[in-house]
Length: 118
Length: 110
Image (cartoon, rainbow over all chains, first blue to last red; front, side, top):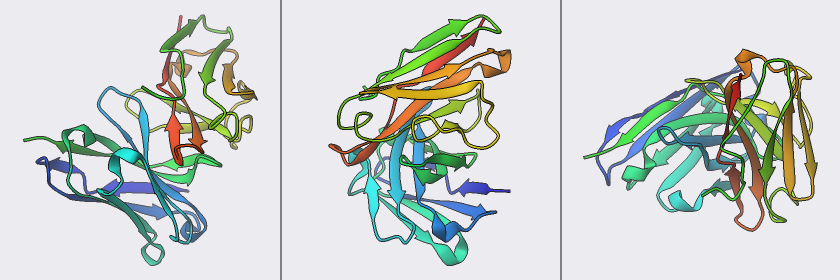
């Protein structure tokens, strides 16, 4: 069974940092693009970042470029999202997803809530 | 405001058919594949359609996707109350070098 489990969310003040983790199991992790998608409370989905199978390229939505970094550790079957200089508008549920837009995001975690507030 | 435009809501009676549109441009839908996602209340999204019209294993053939030019459509036949959810389209945008989701469409089954 394909499984993705996010962790690391929580309450942080504006300007602060958080590191989200996503552990994967049930598939050959190193063969897949991995992505982060977020959803503000009561709002729609927003693509955040994508990392290629070999980690050689990363892509970000413009609003997080320079502040967020996606990375992966294939030995640990994990993908990460380092979030710095957090803003109130970064508040939302962050989902880890397998895949990319070309092939579709075919597996999702349960999400982890990030709240940026003073 | 999303660059992929979906109607905020659609509704139809149980057993009937409904279509949800997703309108984009030549830099996204017109040049790249579209995928569709279902998000039931309080749950993570689920892939329904990928590469415009392909269904993942386990997705019933009541769900179908199509694309023409810069617009895509999700069709659901034989509506069931369990289909009440938010539906999102998604595509890569080559001009932005980034991904896009539509604003989402809330389906109500009457």
